[in-house]
Length: 424
Image (cartoon, rainbow, N blue to C red):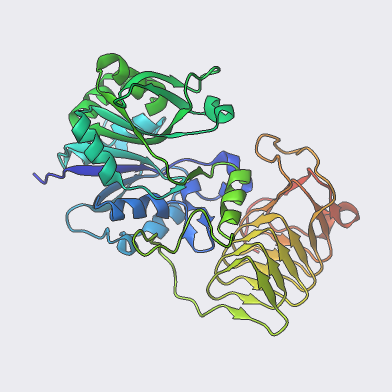
């Protein structure tokens, strides 16, 4: 039997419903980030840089783009004969068939995969966070403490603590209290959703809790272990870490990359972020083009003005067009004279000539105020915006739209247009 010291299980099956139309056709970890990457590139690269060479990626919701992106793991040097990366979707078993119903349930359904490597330790990761972290250091701390489970934590603002699993620790880092999303938190040490378990301990806990509906690490496994053992420890992380699970945090985290000295550095040689990317021609800037405080991806053609924005590959900004404070993913086209202000535009969308995005004042969303609650214009993949229309703030659009979808040539702030999917 093959034996690995530590394997990683990467949870990448979430819908990411708080990203609205951006995730209507793909899992959140497959969403583009920083003009070149996908969100899942960060935990995958962390694994490689931490010498973790065996990674199971658990997929479920709209997995096609994610599976295609990962492939056999070549960009991350995870195309191994023994170990490497393995896609782990739900599958039909003899006797029953079951979707993943919770984070821990998903891991439980893959005990056979983990058993095949007979690991000493299992690293549990989420596929939707932006950060750089040496899991090897966390493992050494786990071993030194004699821990059964180690939870990565980081200090958060006290006003945000109620949104997380909160830990109270003693001077040695041992967890003395744990509470999931407490109304009145007694600490601001928040769980990052990153865990290292002794495999025997994890296997026993998952087996014991297998009948719990929607079994989850934060809600069930950690409280169970906290009751069963006094060897649960915290590993405090003080680097850059962002949960890009909302449209606002996703936009803000991308915009931070355009700072003169960005807090999160994508250009470090010693901790590179790897990705699966097609070969493109160099970016082209026309004689009248202007670009400032922006990232412009390979193969893009800029003839207009781009300011404080992130452009993916093969983006086209026509003459007279302006793109400001926006994220344009791969293959977006902005027509002549169009103005795009504070927008997130998904792949292969076409913005017609002289269209104006981000006009007017903020209004409460008439689609979903919990998801759409900022000044952003959010447009789903492969959409079409017709020429000359005006689109307000805090709006959502998906699909091929025509002039008839915009009464008086406009979509008011807080409005939305959701068309059925189809090829244009």
